[in-house]
Length: 314
Image (cartoon, rainbow, N blue to C red; front, side, top):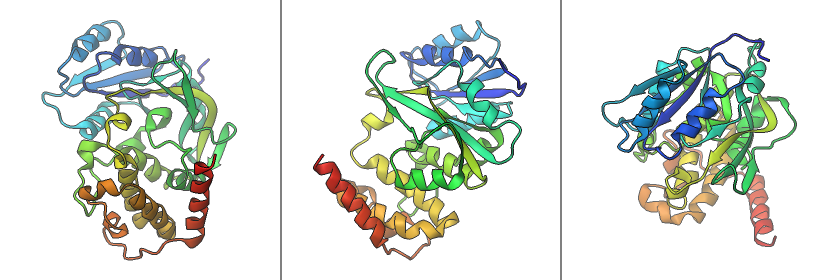
């Protein structure tokens, strides 16, 4: 039973998702917390997505549907979703993913009545379909509130923290402030088009403004893997290197104490993903705009080597 009356905006940017969009929208509309609006912005889809959305809109007044005249790129479409929203809180729902019917009901109490918690994320399932074999991820511990440093250190230097806000809820003001359509960088990478790192910075920039975040140790979100998802269609190394490029933007601007540790991670990635040299990823210096400290953290370097050896022999 809901005790809050705050409006929650569920934000669904979409392009050519005729196969999945109805199921995604229905998972938003089925929330047990009923004071929601579902903002959907179609980015000039060329398949049947727009037709499906028009049919859905007449079934529920909480749907607010928009369409761009031309494709404005993925991140600008995220931004339009956020700009059209009227809620106090915002929950991004990617057009091929799902949330449980009690997602908002269980996450919202951690944000209501406090100014210390910046966002809430949940354990998540990843798979092809809900009915197929799934993998659980982002299980960082028991349900509760954690210091913001756990997220910042965790997402930068661990694999078990989310970069995608698809499993999280934020204050709408933070989404508006912390979604960067483009991320300044030295190698000319257009983040507005490839959209790899803008999602991570929503988390990092929000975490940097608050004392804590909250985690719910229940799988309340489902990330779908398919041939058109960015994680599948991107060439080897593209995702980790672009996330490190976004991380470097954050670290040199807000957390210079982490530069040497991040340098170590970047050094290892450059060795592993030498196939991306043609994209401008050649040296540690390519990841920074003004930082001139390219030293690695020797203790962290040894730690990473030991982990790699453990992976090879297990």
